Image (cartoon, rainbow, N blue to C red; front, side, top):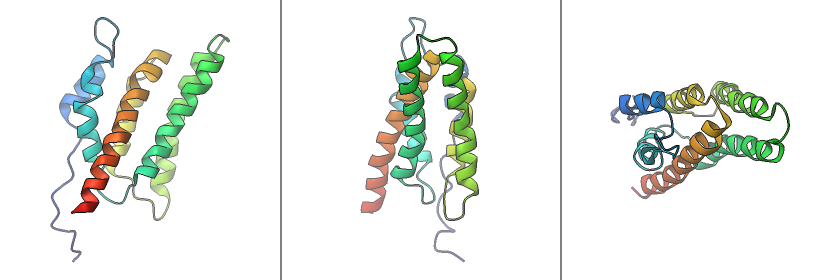
Length: 153
């Protein structure tokens, strides 16, 4: 029996979060809902604190989104730029699945759920650039904070 068998179950992705994503990232004025910057980002980052996922691994996944967004900004005046951005973002699912299958890589199930839910919520370039990307960025920041707090214990 492992010394970790008595640990509490990891926090799951909340139903409130799932409902909020179904409503979309933006309020009626087109601004990013603040709950995606603070409340949900903290909750999601805490749910990733199981296993041995590191802030470096999480940052690598975020960098995929950031790179796709940067390429879109450079090419947005060209035909098909939004479709290319959506294709690049949807590849994140395969990247996550690949990393899950690798031996020695510990990706929490909540991260896979997070990616899937957010990819389902990304229908336009605005969803990705002004919704998913800043939301993911704040999760990376909170994750690093919680990771450091966890190591101090």
